[in-house]
Image 1 (cartoon, rainbow, N blue to C red):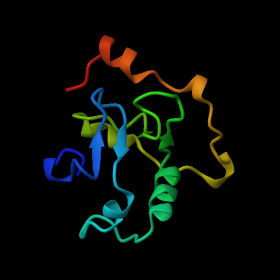
Image 2 (cartoon, rainbow, N blue to C red):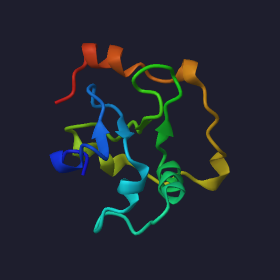
Image 3 (cartoon, rainbow, N blue to C red):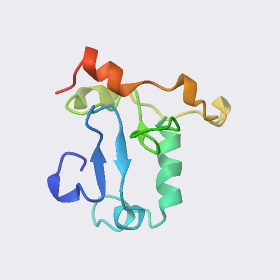
Image 4 (cartoon, one colour):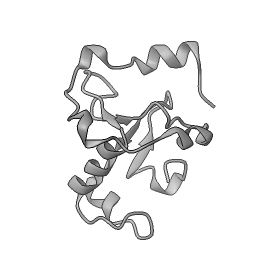
Amino acid sequence: MLSEPHFSHIITWMPHGGAFKILSKELLVAIPGYFSLTKFESFTRQLSIWGYKRLYRRGADYGCYYHESFLRGIPQLTVLMTRVTSKQGKYAPYPEGEPNFDLISRRHPLP
């Protein structure tokens, strides 16, 4: 979905390829065939269950979502994704500890 140009007004990769941004919450959950969820909150809950994190650092990546095993052009990494156990607790935002994708992409560009 992220690589399909006709969805780029709804959800898109960030230029560095390490995170994605949701541009239209309403249209995202309304796409037939992709999600059985009808509420954006349910969608974000599923992201959390699978270990995605939201970025809170100021700048272009603010509000984006990322996962260490979900990178543009490297779909083979998704086999490493697992559901987060409930015992791990809720993720607390820590902007200072978030990855700097711009710096990472300069050193290690993605396809």
